[in-house]
Image (cartoon, rainbow, N blue to C red; front, side, top):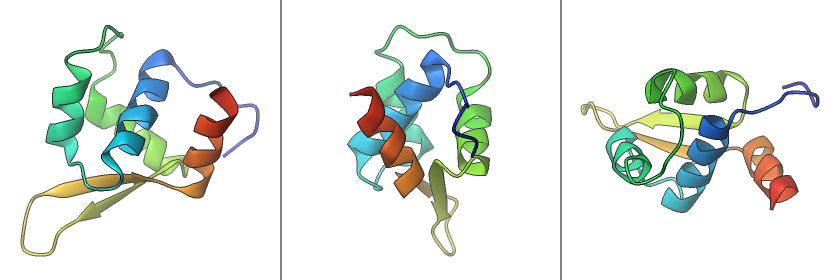
Length: 85
């Protein structure tokens, strides 16, 4: 990830929600929490989550034998949240 990256409001909110889930929330819990927050919904939440993972800010785990996923912050994602708070 480049230090100069600028995150959108949606990206920042998703990082905060993943942090709140403490690595235990799937896309469903994240989406449910997101539905109560007034932020732009474009692009799609899953696209944003996957992009954040590609940037090294999030890690996605898929449980073996199950379609259930869970998301957690990486150290880089945690650092970004610490910088904005």
